[in-house]
Each structure stands twice: as structure tokens, then as C-alpha cells.
Length: 319
Image (cartoon, rainbow, N blue to C red; front, side):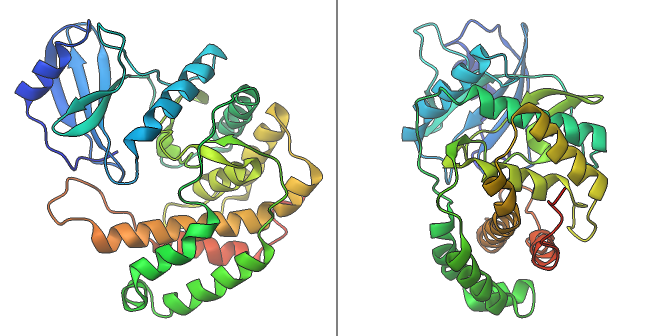
């Protein structure tokens, strides 16, 4: 979450008149994240998230996201539905951007997950994958492994090396390795593709919400497990690996959905790909985020450290 487009309280108050949600009490911009503009809205009736779609989110994809969330909600997955206005429309326009009003879910995002919280998250991810087995919508992954080389070029070799000496050469080498070893024959489904701790809401050790589905797409299902593993199993700077959290996350997933033998064997490669993908998108945002944007830039080296760990420890997923 972030704020790129600044919206006044008066504009938000007028926006809310389209809905039966009460009148505005407060509105606060949310700085965390890097993708869309988000406001925490409190009305006389309830709390909501107002999202204005920026950057990588194509407004044409919003019907897919809405259908997917409705499908998961019907399966009792803890996801936040988008609120329809009095005419039944969920997709709005505000300040020249596509926008949605989204139900607020209780819970907090943990910063240092415990094994119990990781296990609950793995279970929730597996339950989500199970719920999506009969979902017929599809969406191409705009950030799949075929896009990473161009993304690295868009960052620029000098700019990558300014982030970490020798980073450009390391990225080129890793891209070559992943191109040669990427598993293309594994089962696919719609996946979350961005299930970081800040996209999971918890109360104690229970998952109360899975949020921010705007990278959701059709891709290798086990890649979703790898992304989540990379996001949850390390300290924030990526320098410390937590084996207990890692084991708990995989255990929770396997209890809820399971992975085939070929999927399990591919996890080391998929985790390297996940680390490279997030390192490159963070690097691009680090280089290109406007100075006056109300947004928290994220350090690319945190995923460089994860990548190096996965490169040197291919056996961590073995039982």
C-alpha cells in the first residue's frame, strides 16, 4: 500500500455518497508498500480501505480480481470483498484513477513471524489454492520469469551496481541459470504471487485476512509457495534464515493442500526466481520512485541476500 495520488477529505466525502456506508469520519493515507494509493477510511457505519489503482495494475484486470475475491469469499476464505455502490458497481473513478472501496478486515500484519503464525499462513495459502481449483478466470503473470531480463535492463547496469557492487553481473548470471532450469511443466492455477507478511492479517496465531491480490495471476502453483517462503522465512534484511518458520510454513501448506514430488523438487529453483523477481522490482522502484511520493521504498538487497542463501542451500526444502 502507498499514496501516490493525494485525495482531499472533501473528495473522499463526496465519493462515499455513491455508497450506503455512512458519512466520512476520518481518512488516513497508508504509506506502506509501493503499488497503489490507499487510504484507511472510517465512516459512521464501518471502516474501509479506499484504493486508487496506479502503476502496474491495469484497470482492465479489475473484473478478474473482483470475480476471484467473490469466488474465494464464497469458499469462506478470509479475503476482503469490494463494496458495490447503489447501482451495483464496484469499479469507480476518483481523481482520474480507477478506484474501489474495500471491506476492512480486522487483524494486524506481523513483522517477525513465529512458527505458529507461519504454519497458519501456510495452511491459509493451501486453503486458498484449494478454493481456486474450480475458479475459471485467468490472468497472465505480468511479472513472470520471461519479464525479468527486460526489468533488469530497465534498471540499468550502473544503477544496479550502485545498489550493490557487482549486482549487474550477478543478475545476468542468475537470469541465464533460471532460463536454463525454469520448470515449465508443473501444475498451474491462479495464485496470489505476493503473500508477504504485510499481506496477511492475524489475530494471535490465526489468519483473519489475505489481502492485496493485485499481482494475482495464472502461474505455477508451487511458485506461490516459493514466494511466500522467501517472504516469511528470513529476517527483514534477508540476512538471517529461520529454519523453524520455514518448516512450519511448508508443514501448514502440506496439511492443507500438499505438493507433488516434482513440485517439491522444483522449490529451490522457484525460490531463487522469487528472490530475483522481488529484488529487481524493488531495485526498479528504488531507482524510479518519485521523491515526493508518500511511499516507503524497500531495500533490494534484502532479496539479494535471500537469493544468495537459496543459491548456497538447495537442500532446505528436503524433508
